[in-house]
Length: 127
Image (tube, rainbow, N blue to C red; front, side, top):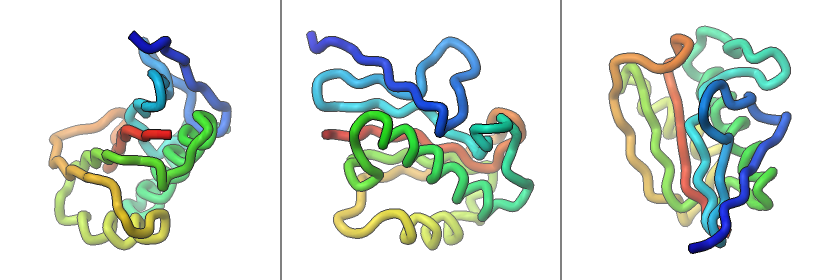
């Protein structure tokens, strides 16, 4: 089995609980769910859905960079939304961060997310 390497950065929200920001095994990085916390304050960026989505992508980018990769190295992205009617906004903002070929993706409607977040994303990245 490949040795596990824990990935951590101050440029993304600190792990709050029994998990790591990401774990690298071989050339695969498993990025834990990111919500729209501002890393320096550990507070929500705002109540605005678009601003929350941008912050989540920024947090994902920081963890990917800490692992030695970029957002473009993400092969699978899971998006959790408390309101699926915001999906068009996610698509528009995602287009600012990704170009083709896009990662595989799932968008899942959920009842609730940590700290009242409206959006959370986790990812699998291959280096």
